[in-house]
Image (tube, rainbow, N blue to C red; front, side, top):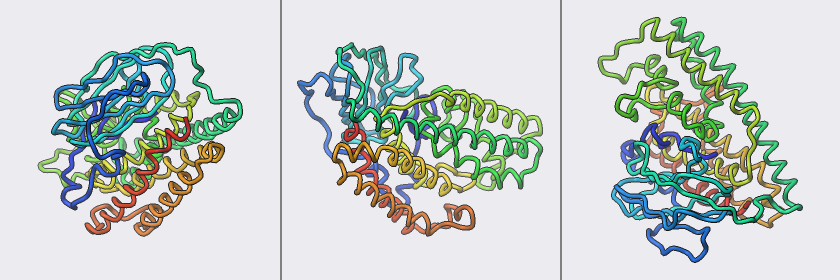
Length: 398
């Protein structure tokens, strides 16, 4: 279920410029371990990945089905990412993002028998360095034991309902937004932009798992691949807030109509695909972690909503989605006597929310450019503090 906003395959990259301007630890929120390297484990489900600027060396090309752990070490000079992709090469089974040079991060997930692809993405651009990866049938069940099955089913029911509700609202608000934009009612479209995107951001990791839709709907201009046509939310955003653009030519009426129709059509496709989705415990947990990664790499740096500067709306929505996913897993954590981890995550969610509340204005938030460097650093530190225990959630529930 997990994926990443500016980092998904064939979509966009994220730069560190905004974070460096404030002296922020862009990668700290995403770091599980602080040293690179490590030897391959005797456990066939514990794999090591050495990611460089030009290679993606996985310690094995096959593993038995069950709980897999990929320990990904970046020995190159560029920030890297690691993905496990489905057989179609589009759907993202799991990922770890923003692995800085010299760092190691783990991807923990459940994998059923089948054919997959591993992929590293040095510099967080392009389609990634891919290789086929096979999961053989271990003969072991991936299902939880009888005592925990009801708790996993409950978490799935709650999260699937949440995803459906958010896509319901996303479709309705996108219809209203695109109607106003196509009609040339820029004032109304600007009012609707951030409140509509909130529903995308709350389920962003689910939406991004559809590799064909995400580049169409949420690519940023700075991260387009050569020859890629720019469509989606941020193309429209620039037309509504062109003040930071140089020599910008506004869209024509026909171009506005085309952009609006494209965004609405893709939203309708997303809506249909989420009607019967279901989720495992590791998917829900990795989704929560992925949403916090989204905050750390796009929202807290102020890069996500470059034109409108409505990043705090997105920030809050990512936190909302992560918290809902975590809340659904609490009974399972309690059953596994992981109350210390559960309490730590809850405490840090509360602290982060308190900071966000300081920047509320009416039904929304102040624009991101009004925050001081110190306020941005406070938010970054709170995200980092939450990301550390949240990174342990998946291993605790599978």
